[in-house]
Length: 392
Image (cartoon, rainbow, N blue to C red; front, side, top):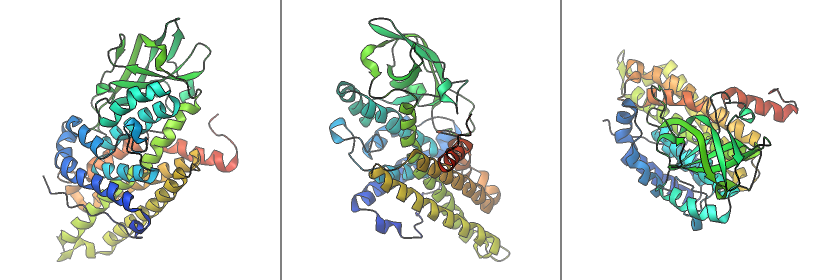
């Protein structure tokens, strides 16, 4: 295993804009990734297995619900701190960041925002500590970009709800203890329910043979006459806007996380270009390689500024869904292009597990699709600026 020599690029001195707390939080996450993720992640990606032993470390650096108040087990941090943690984790691996994103934005966020006090006290502390892991059930076999067409439904049986349906492409599902599941009631209204492992009729088969996010556990959530207690219904918000609000939080985290993957690819390519000698000099001395590297750092810097400003807007409660979509789309697109260019700089070595670039590239093929596809985010921006929906 090569040592983790990563040095984060900061071409526009963004560190000057962060608070002391921001820097402490980021640096703690950065050191944890270097110590506990980088030495093992290639091995786990090669064998397509999630390293469960890192769950306690993710909790220790505040990766689970960092913006959840301390009274519920969270770290009580702001949105920029959340973004920086996601950036550092995805610098290590997108799949590991996915695990943290789901736990924070798609499980803890809806329980905190849409749940009642009893639900918050029951679930959030155990999720924050990593004692319990969660998953989020929205996407279905027949409904991805059109979640409003979901077929998962539940009926009121008097003293409980009866849940039937299936969810697909669910991060953390194979080992989750709880799942926040979105389903339609008998009137067709979308509600969130908390489903717990062990409930009869609830199963979570794993998805195998992935070429992407190989160090992340992905699976299904299957409900066959699952009896859900009535106290597990999230009553704070209903309709499609409820799960989409969770996705806003997750997409925001991704907009930061993708920067981490791009930074790692850039740093790897820059170091390699300085060391690799061809035609009597380092390949970094050739114009075409300098062009690639100069464009990489330019795009990373633009993405950093976009994410930072979005973080300020999130802290102020002013970030819109369309603004978040723009940042997610732009930053993931930026990262995947940088991964491809960085791989070219490394030549044949770029496809090996000795370097992180090919793993990042494969992972980003999922990131550019999940939490809203690349094209759907483009249309969200189009709707926002024109006032006309292109979805129907």
